[in-house]
Length: 472
Image 1 (tube, rainbow, N blue to C red):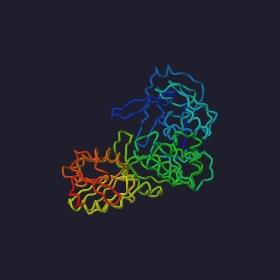
Image 2 (cartoon, one colour):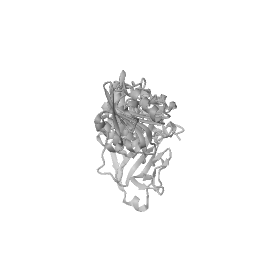
Image 3 (cartoon, rainbow, N blue to C red):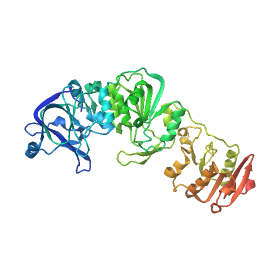
């Protein structure tokens, strides 16, 4: 629950700061022990790390021996809380008490340093964040229990997936406003740090072609990232910590933000709430999107692997044009209709590098695989067409099922592609499957069946296990 009033800070004389130590709870969840202990050895509750789902920072073991052996520092300090190296957790949690340090630059800020880390120090990007925020307090990295003359413990201005206090929002909003470019659209890519979005590179190619600036935040300085956010009219991307920098902007007016949620199998309400928490506190024009056409391939912990069966949902949200197929066939549609009629096919699979030729066949089950369909597959889902708008290699690797055997299979593309697809599609065929393959019969292995060459105009096709050539 958010604070019921203004943020406060309480001073504790002769108090001890204990560093941050990780441990695993009985339920298998990670947690930590840390805290500030008053002169009587009692933990100060406001010094413990809490999130919306409960405590994750528990009181360290503090005994008479701990007190007696504690290092002595004769200064008054502000307790900064847990120091984190993680970009998002530093911005949201480590800085949650820094609002008070900003008001009292004369006081050192004491961080609970993780006991499993090396030499205590700010990273370059953390120093850059603190410079933007105007934090000039001397840092004290507490790597062993340390007793200070006085420790001020401020309330936390942010709690993960729970709240951002108005004072915290105002403290963080420090990066100066700049004129926004109405034509600047920025996509924050995670594809170089997270390979789990299997369609990322295809999407980024379409974005770049449509005039979006695709950036990789981890390759940019903090100032470069903030400048982009401060001057863009639109910012979008897959859910990630780079969006937390929006909290540092002094002015978010005129900016639209679109975040693609990590989990395609959960509603928006079940996603990471930090983004909405920040948006609510800053009155951001932000929109969270669950892409219904994404398929979850794997999800161990927070590492998600997913594949979009079409980019149509992205195009709708980001206002991208629909790409046209690179080539068409004039003879193919007629050939495939004849084959479907003469064989009585009730199921159809087409894998192509061209414009699909069988989407309108009168066959009950039709599955089309093409990197560019030329139509929105979501609009055809009600008439028996399952269309995958993606590279055929992704289809065969992640979506093709041997439980579905097709009566008619059509393959059209370059010789190398077709040769590979024949190998991959065989487990989706049965003994009587008819194949229609673009190109000469030399592409077709003898083991696939009897092959016949069919020439229509300037196009050559090969029919395998089909009717006599004169019937095609």
